[in-house]
Image (tube, rainbow, N blue to C red; front, side, top):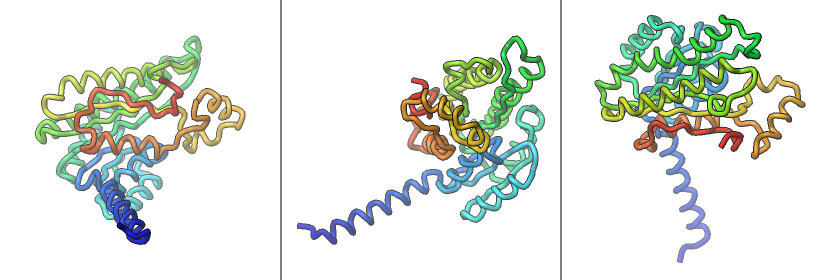
Length: 270
């Protein structure tokens, strides 16, 4: 028979081992994340570093947010580097991925996270508002995925993770451009999964719901409450909860998961 002390020690050691294994789910992998200077992208970068990954991340400008993230990731003992890049521009995307491969040697996972909103009712939406959202949210996915494809094909492995939205599944009034871009990401993910599965390259989408970021946290309390009332879990999600699903999809735990859309929304959209 085990004594209580022995049992507690066993649990402590087992939990510690489990924690270490979780921490190293992405050990020695290189993850590329677009739009990572703040919000969900930043949380994904930090979670990937905690899981042992080397992290290359991009944003439009190499500003203080990027510099601080680069420093924070480096302190975790992984290789990290930020790149100023316009993911909605084909040439810029190719140049950035070329630099990343030169610096890191490989790309094991790509997280297409860059995104913007330009909300308006269809009758008032301008062509510029439509084009801006489609280019940043959807064209960037094409640009970056095509840019990393050659490296992943050579490796015969890779995971492409596209940050879509529940709005891309269920739609939302005043967001026809955003909904179209996010729905397009889901269709893109399913098609790439079918094309590249034979080379052991997976492609999945994540559809976050109402996530509390710096931007949404500033909404009036009555507006936030109206959102919470629509969510069975009665709260907003956190960027870290989205990042946790990214870790799963980037790791070998999801080695037979491809062409799927995983909702992170507290059952807001089922």
